[in-house]
Length: 293
Image 1 (cartoon, rainbow, N blue to C red):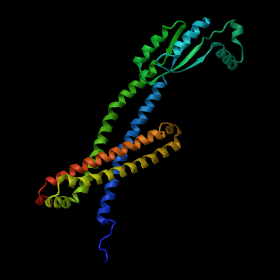
Image 2 (tube, one colour):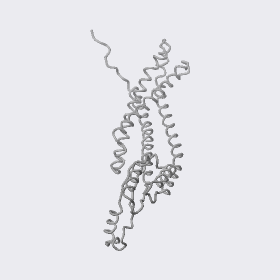
Image 3 (spheres, rainbow, N blue to C red):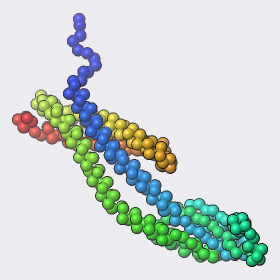
Image 4 (cartoon, rainbow, N blue to C red):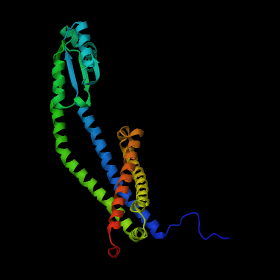
């Protein structure tokens, strides 16, 4: 006896076209959302780098007792606001300066006119004008410290620039995010609209609403996961092209960061796909048959 049906499902040309169109639309939308996430991440990293450019230099008193100097250096190194330190003693600095000048000014003066210096890189959390002022005041109270110099004007300029850019960029990001959500919702709604008669037929023959929604929601999740993966691949290609001309950006995007980005795009795609699908299916479940045309 011959079999009239095949174990593999067959998809019509219209179903394939709908699936491809939905996937492409969701991919482009998730790509836009992913680029916003990448730009926000890069912005935070660049802000951290800019703040760390505000270095602090501590000048010690000349002819300071060795024990006092060692205690002052240890206090600075272990300060909770300090990320890293570089120490330059006066004798080494004098020899370097003599080599540049080509003559010995120490023999002429009879003493080393330079002071021991410690160059300090602050932690990002302390690299604000308010926090850095507190840290500098604390450093100035350390015995043996002559003076503490820091680039207050540079830091204030950085903060003023960030304040001017923050709200316009945040507003633009919100607008793009809402537009992306609307595009995904519209794409899913058009996909469900093409199958509205199937939904209503299942409802008329007594199918429970949940059993009608479930396969559509599962399909929306699949579309979202595929679209999220395609969007991630496109972002990776763009990052590779950018890194080709600016290798410093590659340091920001470690494998862990890329995996997190992929996970975010998958979660966004699956969540938005399932929610939009459920809303669209419910809309047609509530409609009367004569209003579907």
